[in-house]
Image (cartoon, rainbow, N blue to C red; front, side, top):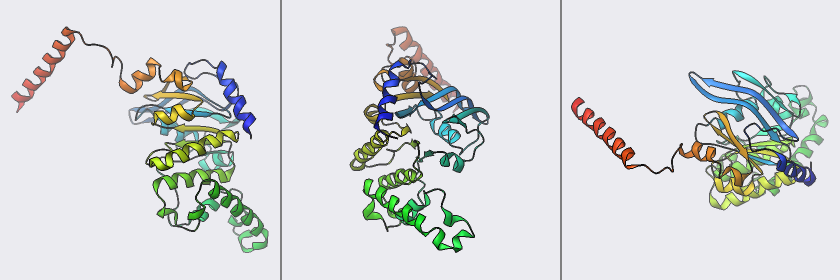
Length: 304
């Protein structure tokens, strides 16, 4: 994974059409017919989705659009009613979340999932995979796993320095601020050395002082050649760091494209603000709306 991977990925997007479900030159994730319903509500109804390798893709949409539900489905934290998807050509449907992570596809959460009664360094060590000391019999033979744990600790310390959390190394994770917990989650995710990192609203609840730091860290993931997919409502962040934007509304993908194109797309404006939000009302329209409102008030008065 390197800068060249990122540059190639961004160059490849230049030829991608701005249509929902557009095929990508080198997709790391491909999904088809993914649906999820809750009772009578269809939360996700995605016909086709592809995530380009080596770039930062933003997944945006109004509240209730199905973004986090789609994250949960792709990463094995929820099961769809139908659909199939793959990561690096490996079929993921039906695979539990921990196996998805082992393949190199990890995610963070809107509400952070740090283990508050463990220290920061202990949280980091837990992020490492394939630890020999986790096996019952091997745990009784420290010489077989001590060197591996030392290597994991050194990697964890490097990441804590990178995310400026090294001063908090021995503090309980529960004592961290909301923004510091976001940083810890991102650092812990990197203990897996993932190819794809999925961030669910990384800026939610983060104070302005830490926002720029988080933005810089997300960009650095791309420069390492990693792929980033993130959910966000902060449109300034989306414009600043994303190479490609996918828009969801009512469970469906309604638009795709580069940030500057998406912000001017009528389908996106309608998804966020409602159709005809900027249309001028004629005098007849205004009179009709006023008459309907008056009639409703009169009816309520009669009922009382």
